[in-house]
Length: 122
Image 1: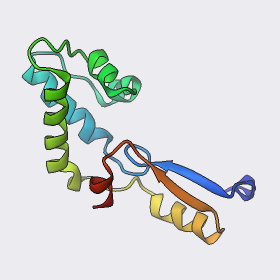
Image 2: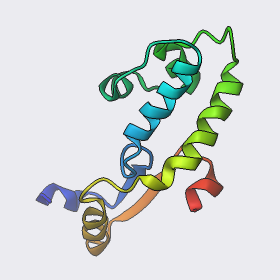
Image 3: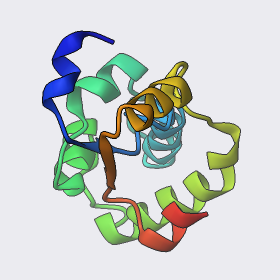
């Protein structure tokens, strides 16, 4: 950790894909939905390039047209599959050590996420 971190009193972290390594899971679940819709799959690299908010735009860029299933239906399917598989994921390497180091420096840390709060708590 470099000396410039002394200038910070607070850090705001994102959860999914920043601290929690669920990138491959998200790409795999999207591919499940794309296959179901007879659409081409995406690579993990493509997922990283196209993921955006609002999430409906990400679905469109991934190839969904919502002709067969609506965004709401696909989104619910995504979350069901994600919830089943999320426990196979963990933190990115070095995250625990980094968070501990920042805590030891009395830097306040906050978590901001689009993930549903009750799911985030578990």
